[in-house]
Image (tube, rainbow, N blue to C red; front, side):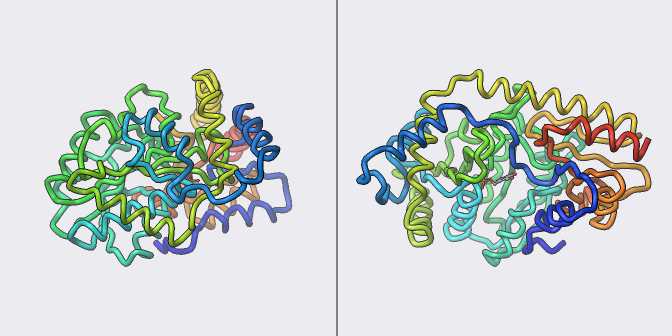
Amino acid sequence: MEYETPQFFRVMRYASQADRDVVDMVSGSPDWEPPESLREGLVEYAQGDTERFQYPPSVGLTGLREEIADRRAVDREQVVVTNGAGEANHLAMSAGFEQFPGSEMLLVDPTYPYYAGRASLLGADTRYVPAGRGGVPDTATVRDCTREETSVIVVNTPNNPLGATYDRETMAALVDIAADYDALLVSDEVYDHFDYSGRFSSALSFDSPHRVVTNSFSKSLAITGWRVGYAVFPDREGPRGDLFDHARTRHMLTNVTSSRPAQAAVLHALRETGPDYYENVRDRLRGRIDTFTDALDTAGATYTDPDGGFYVMARFPGFPGTFENVERLVDEAGVAGMPGEAFGDSRADWIRFALVSPRVETAADRLAEFFG
Ligand SMILES: Cc1ncc(COP(=O)(O)O)c(C=O)c1O
């Protein structure tokens, strides 16, 4: 699979140029409202003093770093605010390759395609561990696949595309494997607010110089366009304090800093938003998952029933998830998903649907009719 050219745009473009109405379920851009306080925070910022329109500290607004640190029970000095989880992943991986021996990145198949693309950008080799039946990799297999050449292990929980949520035992084992092989575990937890199982366990629950956690507000506050994320590095006074320094320098030389209005509004929203906001979004998504998977039953499909995140993967009999078939689905059923082959070989027969459309029910009906 060619990971360097993002495939999302190819399908989105095809869907937008179709001759008919299409429900777009290709990319993971939330269709629901951010918390009201986010808009308030931005308005307040825009009306404020121009002094605050100038460079914030390169590693992020101090207040935002403190808020993140409090929530994640870490020290503010471990946090770098980034341009989304995308940059956080890049900084973590690049720091891992610089600081740990080896040139190989271990990924779980199927994988979020940008990890593999980034590995090749960083000149790393990739090796894949299969996701187990429920979408969680068997930790004994991860251990077997890890070797001296492995310098970075990347996991994503709750998972895109499979919807699996890794429990505490799995996370503990992954942190141990990274330590045993002198590697860095990068745990991308961008869907942490979308855990329906109650089993989600952050890699931050385990104090180790061998793990970095990446995250962002793109999904949790429904603002993929605002570009505010972060990475939490190991203790700066500890044996891998250099990881933070590496990331800070890269972040500064690439970006100078990150958008101040976006950071200010996110900080305001974090302070003002209660748990109800997140609970309501989860309820809405649970409803969509039920509607969609009911229709997949009617369509005779096999599918994932996500424990977290907002994607469902489906396999339709005699209709593998190639680009050609996805385009056929656009033209003939009016539903656009993402070809399974874009996520790796293991799910090449499947199609991924992002449940981020108010028209999930329409899409479900169309699929049930097309395949039923
Ligand atoms: C697993 C995963 N990580 C990272 C990202 C990118 O997040 P951000 O928009 O914060 O860069 C996505 C976006 O879909 C994702 O699915």
